[in-house]
Amino acid sequence: MGEEDQRNGNGRKEGRKSKYAVACSIVGSIISILMGYDTGVMSGAMLFIKDDLKINDTQVQVLAGILNFCALAGSLTAGRVSDWIGRRWTISFAAWIFFAGSVLMGFAPNFATLLVGRCVAGVGVGYALMIAPIYAAEIASAESRGALSSLPDICISLGILLGYVANYFLAKLPLVYGWRAMLGIGALPSAALALGVFAMPESPRWLVMQGRTEEALTVLRRECDTPGDAEARLAEIKAAAGLADESAPGAPARNNSGKGVWKELFLHPTPPVRRILVAAVGVHFFNHLTGIEAVLLYSPRIFKAAGIESRNEVLAATVGVGVTKTVFILVAIFLVDRIGRRRLYLSSLAGIIASLVCLGLGLTIVEHTPPHHHAARWAVALAIATVFTFVASFSIGVGPVTWTYSSEVFPLRLRAQGNSVAVAINRAINATVSMTFVSLYKAVTIGGAFFLFAGLATVAAAFFYFFCPETQGRPLEEIEEVFSHGWRARRSSPAAVELPRSTAGGKPEGS
Image (cartoon, rainbow, N blue to C red; front, side, top):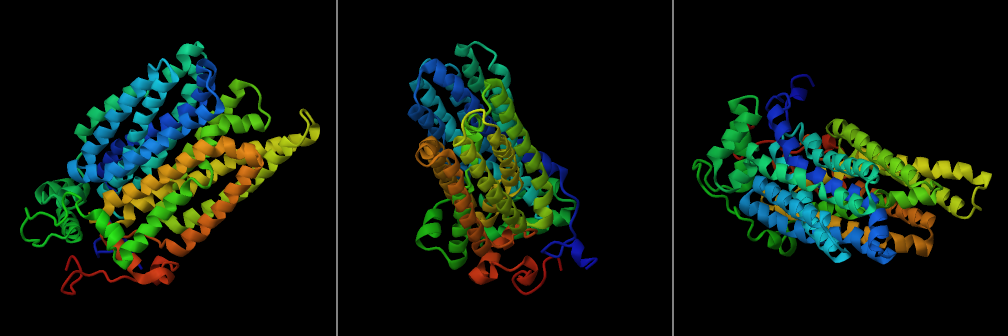
């Protein structure tokens, strides 16, 4: 212990967390606030859109879910775009897409124009979900990567909360202006962020992939505590990028524009890459099958079903959901690098399953009890309370860990496009849940829908336990090796699977 505990996996002493990397990650994660705002504000805006445009429940479901189908297309293209133009400019591009979508929705005269604006914003969502955690993971050091790559999730939650607050205050405007103001106001921060990227550095790992090692070293010197640490990190990144001749600073990486990545992922994957793909896609597949999107997007309907009747009370309760989500993700940011991804994720799922069972029970009793019957009061209280415990449980583990995990497990050459596939799966499941939830609870009752989500969350726990190893504290360049030990080793703690930590030639790095 002692001196050994103060060193990271490459034998270098751990320095204090880079304030520069933290600042860059915060700016890069602001794009996620826009995505969260669009989700949060729509949950309340739909109440007013339905009254103003006279749309039916089917159109409401389409409006809710179309964003995620378009986000699927955005996320699939974002990986290749970010390999081509860089992480920083991809963030700017996503912000301009959000700007266009917000303007269209804010000035929409009819349902068709509103739907087009929602689609455009959806493409921006796909870009934001893919690029924000990638940029944060690539700019951070190993000891702070979990916290920094969780920043996009806290920003999504902050955006959702801001959307709920906007619902509450802008609901007081005349019907024709209220929902348009809710949706259109997102154009202002979008434009600010699109210009704000000029203050951000490019990802040093992307620069190395382009053979621009001198520029990468300049960024790393600003991130690291000493010039020696910066040069050592550069050497690791160059080796992971596959530079043939490390002595030639300008030598291009063997895959500097993202060509051939899908072939390596799907047609000819190595065993570690296949396991990485299963883990990264799997955590995103189960992320929304817990029912979080149903709760966030349809929380006003859930609160109405639980017995809250006043529209202002419903919107106020929804703001409470946003506050809960934000607070508990902040807690997760402090825990993810201390207790590890696995323990946080699995304990989070235990809380989710318990909350969903209680929520389903409470809503079922309320649904089958005559109105104003005293016996149902405890069930109303149970249903409302478990909405909050469910959101808290999700936000402290499954939510942030999903994005942290998928952004760090892929090797550098596959990271952007591999993560774009995982995010596309996330959006597809999100869209499926958001577009079918109303029909689902009408078919199996609202309580039955949450019992179903509880069962799916149980399957998610089994998946993560068996297929997702711990990555806490590992440099990005070592994580592929974690996945080379097969499925059984994946269930062991990091200490039980000691990995070799030396460079070619057998010398420890830094010697």
